[in-house]
Image (cartoon, rainbow, N blue to C red; front, side, top):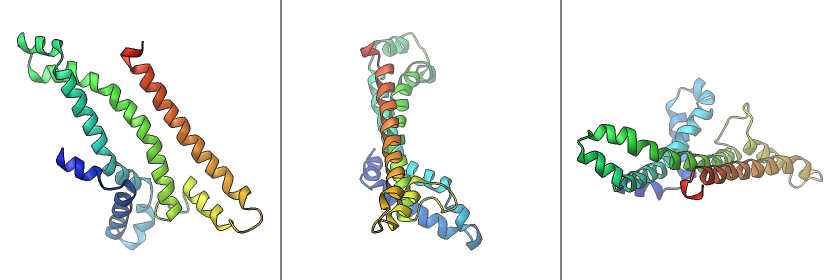
Length: 178
């Protein structure tokens, strides 16, 4: 987990910029525009986010391993693979689903930030960050709010909705709140 701690200390935006730049430079000139698609962004964001999932799984597995039913399964001779597959893994899926939902909002903001900076999605593909960047160009004109407000409000509402979904999912799947 020390490597994970080091990875967690590096900002997601910095990792995404680095991965995006390196992947684009590795591609031939004709394919660089295609390489700027969502796949590179997903890879870059995933390289930063894996640590949170690893920590969640590890913590939940440690908690489940200490429970009585796992100890009882060991005592009666159940193989370690079966204990892992039938008892520990199913109990780690709920926190992973909640973490994924909550991190999805952060991934949306990261993509919008990268697109706003011009290194995210290419201009030929729609992105709220690109729309905000275009609206930012009209900031000093008289009608800037017509161009800038809709994508900003949509981005905020989308992230809030995804986070509310994550909160609801956490509450719905928590056995202590039932």
